[in-house]
Picture 1 (cartoon, rainbow, N blue to C red):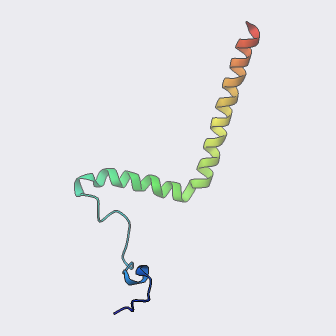
Picture 2 (picture 1 turned 30 degrees about the horizontal axis):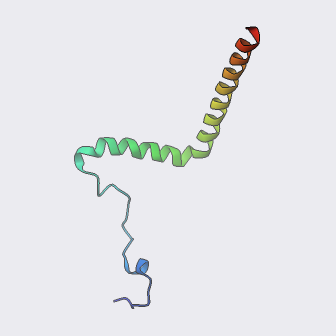
Length: 75
C-alpha cells in the first residue's frame, strides 16, 4: 500500500498504458489506424515535413504576390 504523503501520480499504475487503442470501438479501428499512421509519420519526419511545407507555402505566396504586382503595375 502507498503512503498518503505520495503524490497521486505515484499511486496510479502506468506500466501498460499505450494510448487510445483500448478506448476506440472496434468499428472505428480503420479510421484510428489512419490517424496513427499520420501520427507516426509526423513523429518520424515532423521537422523536415514542416520545413518543406513552409518552403512550398513561401514559394506559392511569393508567386502570387509577384503575379498580383504585375497585374497592378500593368493596369
